[in-house]
Image (spheres, rainbow, N blue to C red):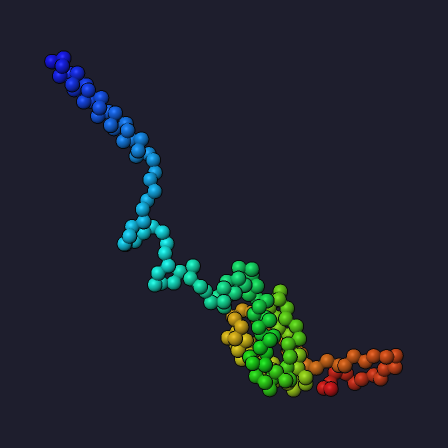
Length: 167
């Protein structure tokens, strides 16, 4: 019986040694092979668009402007550069953008006669709607329309005027 215990102990010891060797290999990381077919864990470009695909320049610039917080500035610049296109050629010849107040989102327009100032005041709601449609909602919240200003007289001798009127 002592021989059976020795054989049993020998088998037990061999099994313990094999288990300890195997546990050493289990803790090591082996490089994973990429499967030849099927899904792998790495991201690949496929039939559907992802962030690594070439992007349109307009989309990239919109994201750039948004990240830097320049939406209002670019919208106002767009409004000023496209003013004749937005309001029409006839109105643009008589009405011009004087000042844009960024703190209150107020657009101040200057007309070349009081008659045009009155007409634009009557059309101000339509004009605001058209501006919001073209450059974005909330860029211009209020419109102030002013008539013509008196010309600045230079020199020492001045003739008094009768007040504000069309020139």
